[in-house]
Amino acid sequence: SSGRDPPPLYLVIDFGKPNETFTPHATWGSKLAATWVKQGKDSTTILLQSAIVDDTGSTTKPHTDYGAPEYFVTKLEVPHQATPDAERVQVTVWGVNKTATRLPETMFVQFTPDTTGASPMWEMEKLGQWQK
Image (cartoon, rainbow, N blue to C red; front, top):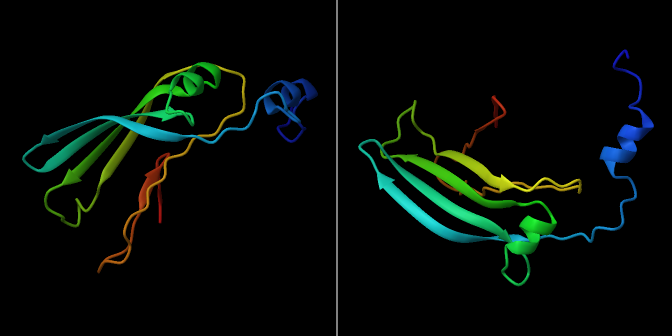
């Protein structure tokens, strides 16, 4: 294949999920389960454990029926002193024990920084590239 040909029909049908109607659409939030803080010499590390919960607050349906990770761990590393080389809050998110399903799904991380300060420029590294 030249790479320009359309994908084979079985691929679109099997993985594209066109006109998939048997799975009800769901939008759920998350619930914070635990927090750990470690203050170091140059920075403070914060670990947050959270899980996707359904409308009743249960993690069972999102994880078991829809394939959501059992829980997430978010690591924030905040430097104590801002310098040109260390004006960063480093954020890492891990999804733990993701259930395999063949259902279409989407997850995202939302971060809404305060941009009203004296230096409102924010950048992030995403998949090895810096985004402004």
